[in-house]
Image 1 (tube, one colour):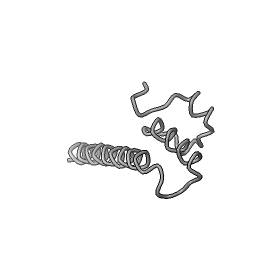
Image 2: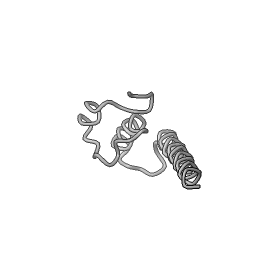
Image 3: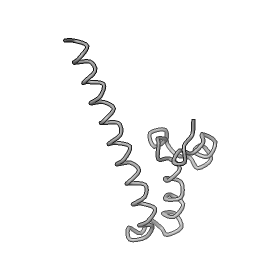
Length: 80
């Protein structure tokens, strides 16, 4: 199931996104890479796209860590 921040496999393949970057924030990576190419990878350009992508990555990390702690808690309760 694709969310608003997940691009389809066809879009990712067409834009030649490596497998390691095909995650929950892949739809935000596509416009960032397009902007980077248009602006010749100038570090001060594409700030909005970069910050949006990095925020998505951070939120995904926090979600995964909460899920992991919930699993650990459940395993500890089960072991008791």
